[in-house]
Image 1 (cartoon, helix red, strand yellow):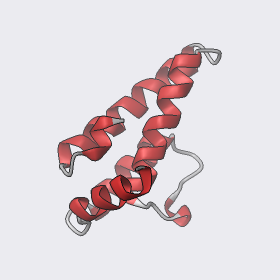
Image 2 (cartoon, rainbow, N blue to C red):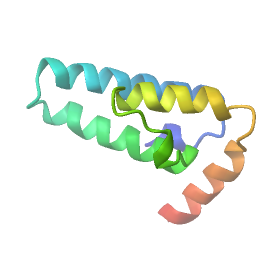
Image 3 (cartoon, rainbow, N blue to C red):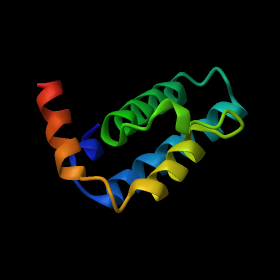
Length: 92
C-alpha cells in the first residue's frame, strides 16, 4: 500500500478513511472479498505505522474508530518518518 510509505499525517488520515469505508462495505455485504482485502491491508499498514498497543482497543468500536482515537492521542508524539523507514526496511 503506497500510502503507508508516505511520512505524512494525511496518509494516516487517508488510511483510516479507507479502513472505515471497507468496514462499511462489509457491513452491507459480509461476503465482499475486495472490501475484506482492503480492510486487511489498511489495518496492517496502520498497525505497522502507529504501533497501537492492544490495551488501546475498545471492543465496542470499529477498527477505524479505534485507529482514529489512537491517532488523535499520539499524532503530536509519533515520528512518522521513523515508522515509514522501519516499514520500508521490513518490506524489502
